[in-house]
Length: 479
Image: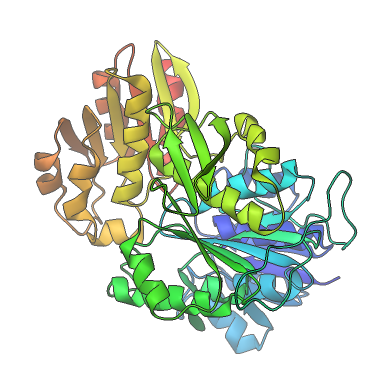
């Protein structure tokens, strides 16, 4: 096997690529600018050597190939050294499509929000059905302890797995064997690499694609929603007629994507009983709901996740599992044991009567739905949010106007207003329904939280980055 160096190895996607390459028998090393948990912990457990910073000398002379993350651009010292030396290089998405996906039926989970959670739910359901899927998830799945694995690679049915056929539909060319090896991938619309500006998900050629939702995001590469819709249309073009598109029936932007052209059977999900897959809330916080297929109730789910958005995620995953031959009623009870993904409203601990959460927030809609779910669970208890606007879209101010309304379920908010923030946080703070203030650094933010928090509070840290370890530092200070 070869030796691989991964540039941007600590990213959630590239860390998964590293795990898969290691499982295939390759020697793997890598470098990154920012290295923090949970991905740094996973890579350490895999014994993969990490180097801090993108220096040319960090790439070993005997490396056979360099896999380049999409965070790196021309002008980066390591990229320039790779090009000047004429080294073999590729992107993570292309490497996955060439080295892992051939011979497997791919299930891709796309959307602005909920990709990681939905990918994890789908993987868990397929595992419960005995299918032993491979997967690459943009986070560390609590139920598997890793973000990626190869899974079963043979065409022989796994122990306890029945042999099913993918249900056909009008215009389909024959059924697909449902005991083929499966691979579930979180399918990101962000661009692939500095040399390939297509969305990563066009590389995956899925048999089944979930289109979870579509909103404006990634303001650094997309000028408007229409540009994102065009990329989703390109994904739709790659799904074969014998496959399936599992589409959020409530999303107008996705309806417009399908109107651009669709050659695959579509199954919609949502809360409307007219959809092929629908849910009926039994508990207002989304912790218990009924699942209906074609208007017929299949059973109830009682699980630990919260929020209407997670009910939608579960519906999408059940529909996708059904598309590859899994009976929903067979696997729905497994959702009671589902433990989600690290940093998705993850409870870090409790001290002095204060519950501390870590959440991977990156978009106003995700912030709003997460906090609404928590509000439905905790009732009148105070919710205090520590917010780091860190994603490219957040830092550029693309979501500034929508941020304050997204925080309506919070009683108090402390913003981390770093000097490089390109917009005026004061305007957002003034518009927040509850109490709000800003801090210039993490130390100031933690001091503000410690002054505000009291017994009975739920303190939620929201950032798609490392947040300088703030969530665990706050919990440690309470303890």
